[in-house]
Length: 270
Image (cartoon, rainbow, N blue to C red; front, side):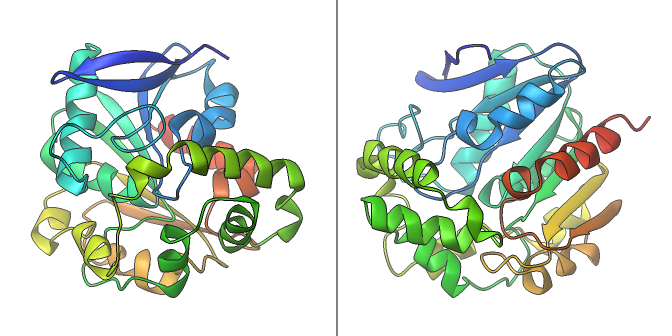
């Protein structure tokens, strides 16, 4: 895998995994503590790098991308930084794949940059108007540092609990500890306001013209299918939904082959 690099966007460094050749695909990670672009999307990028150029940044406040001075994060910042990152990299058109929080950013970006965004894949997505903060997402955002906090968080993310291995727990605990200072400023309680910040207006959703694929785990408790994905079917002009049985909040990790196949088939559509 190619080593991540740093791209300066509006004077701030953005840490980016830039892998493969072909049409560009921007990959936006979710919001759990310890999340990074390469951690969330490394396996996907490795599998698809022969056909596409996969760009997976650490979004502001995550991994090695700091929050710009005076910023707390939020949908507007993440949307603008994603758009300007692709500008800075000289990419004129691209598909966007977003997981959870990143799904809301992907949809927001499609609304803000209709001439650049060619397609959207929103995975276990946030963004639906009126979607409440689930108890599970509240607990994920509140996960404490240390192995026990990492273990409990991973247990909420996965339907298949065999994926909560000692190696996965240790890796996530280390990542949570490394990013604890920045993450503490992103989603302090009361947390329902941050979930609300990550919702899109009905008008914004209805104005999105790019084709959208929603991918959702049937057993997702963090962003439940009924309140997160189904309402978007009524608001998006060109949308389809694929539900994965026996899958929780992280399809790219829990069912990687199924997810990669769905993603490749959708991105290859004329």
